[in-house]
Amino acid sequence: MGRNEIKRFLSHLADKQNVAAAARRQALNALISLYNPERLAVCH
Image (cartoon, rainbow, N blue to C red; front, side):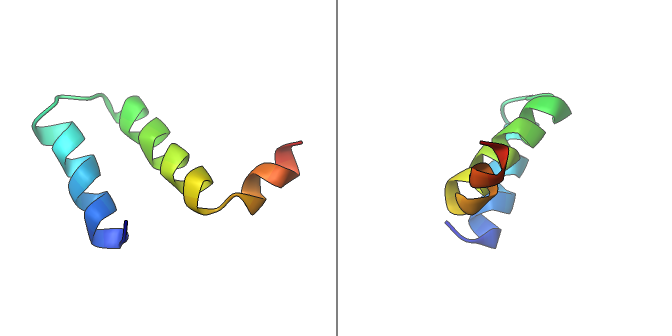
């Protein structure tokens, strides 16, 4: 999933699913963690 797909996904959540900003941020953070697992290593 690239940058454009992520933008479309988050826009879809906002426009079509009426998802709140906090939930969209949570979805974005989940994707960041998925694609950047070394960030999670700092938390442990």
